[in-house]
Length: 380
Image (cartoon, rainbow, N blue to C red; front, side, top):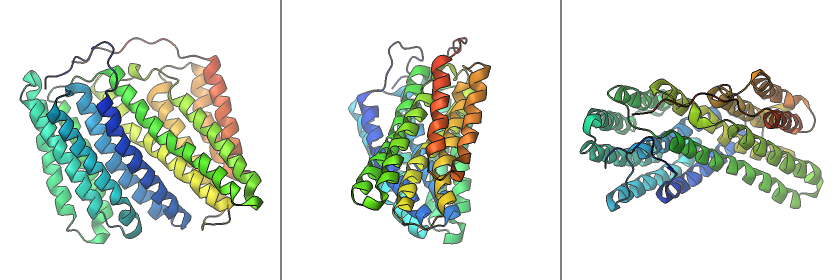
């Protein structure tokens, strides 16, 4: 398992990486569904806290494998088996989402998470055997992950009232491991490959929103009184989702990752972009329930479950990738548009202003292509 060439031509996601992503479709779908149910019950603070914690576990497991694979992936039987073991951990984690939301019981979630991370330790130790000058980095990764997993196991013995703060502390510890390890010597990430992988995960998350659009049509077929607003929601959801896709893939993401600092910024701040995309699909489901006369949220609160995720998504991708490749007009319209969608709840027709604003943003992106920038520095 030697380090991959960071300048390798034609590097694309492998079939194993795409197979690996399938279990995250399951995990994201279950988490978004439970978030939607929790939001509909009316306790927004509780629902949001648990969603952000559980989404962190999903995102972090995906991201760690993704960055490892861009540097050390091989295709022998052992690498495949360890990857499939990580997939098993994701499925266990997904099975624990419901009790985590309903009873703040993170036991199954943590067990699945530790299974994934132990497999990741094995991957790093294997890479260490042939990493050459990067051996110290790979060992620090393995050791750091192992130490944090010991604390995750101890987490299971904590009383329920300490679960959330302890979860946050351990999440911060996980985030610190790559920061420390990469300072020992950078792993050779491939900029085109890593940004392609991020784009594929974005598509998974946006796919959940399209499911929400389909669900609105299905609900409309069973509720003649709400037929018009539900069909409107379905159409507007498709427009907004397409605009989010257009906005995300407008800038050349590979230009953003130039050094360790920019790679950490790109990797870590994507948490908010990804979490917002997942939350958008939950918000659509909340709005559908609200139009059908169900749920505990009022008109304004239900609308905010849609508009806030859209605003966070657009602002996040603007900050991470768009602003470096955009002219003054684009750098004005995109963030202003993100803020304008927050005014949507004052309108009587949900999602309408959001759809209009996002369409305008896309129109500006069409007529103002990315400006040329210098190529990223070689990564070694």
